[in-house]
Image 1 (spheres, rainbow, N blue to C red):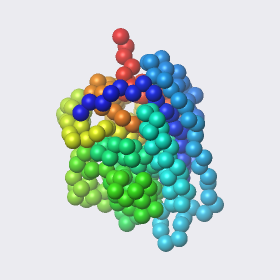
Image 2: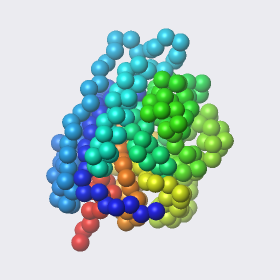
Image 3: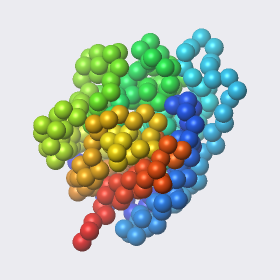
Length: 303
C-alpha cells in the first residue's frame, strides 16, 4: 500500500485531562504549539491549518450513574465532536494531526478516520495497552480503555461514537513499546490477536526490524495507517513530562528511527501525539521531543 503524499495538515488540539483524571495534560496542546510545531511542519514544506482547540469542560461529578468510568459523559461528548472534526478535515482532503491531551481522545480521532478509511491499520506506540474495559480497569480512567473502544469493546456510549461498525481490525493493529499491561489486558490482547512488541522484542530484534514487521502488518489489505503515539512510550529520561511514566522505555534515537521508517514508507494518513504534561515536565522537554518526532514522521531530513 502506498498513499499520495498530503501537503495539507490540519492540527486539532484537544486539551483533555479527564481520561487520566490528572491535571496538567490539558496544557499539552499549548506546550506543543509553543515549541513551534506549525513552523516546523511549514519548514518541511507543508501547508498547516491550525484549527485551534476543542472545548473540554470539567464536570463537578466525576462518575456517571451505573458505571465506574470517570467523566464518561464529557469524554463521550468531546470525542463525538472530535470524530466529526477529524472527519470534516479529511473530507477537505487534509491530513488530521491531533495533539493532546490524554489518550482517551484516540477514541474520537480513530472514529473520525474510519469514516473515510474503514480499513485503517494502526500503530499504537505506547508503554500501556490501553485495552481495559470497565470490568478490567483498576482505576476507571478512560485513557486506559481507548484502544479497546476503538476495537469495539467497552461502554456503548464510547463504542457508538462514529457508528458501531466503524471499528479497527485487531489483526491490523500493532502495539509497540509495551511494558505495563494489566492482567485483564494481557488476556484480551491474546484473545483478539493484536500484535505486541514489548521492550523485550525491541531489545532483541532492534527497532528497524520491529518497524519492518509492523509495516507488513498494518499495510496488508488496509487503506491507510494511523499513528497513535503516547509520549510515555519513550523512556522517562527522554520524556519526563507524562502522567504515567514507566522505566525502561524506547529511546529518543529509536523513536526517531521508527518515525523515519514510517515516513519513508509513505503510508501514514492520520496521526495523534498525546499525554504531554507540562506540569510534570522539565523546561518543556517532552513537548520538544514530540515536535521533533513529528518532524521525522513527516519526512524531515538532515540533508
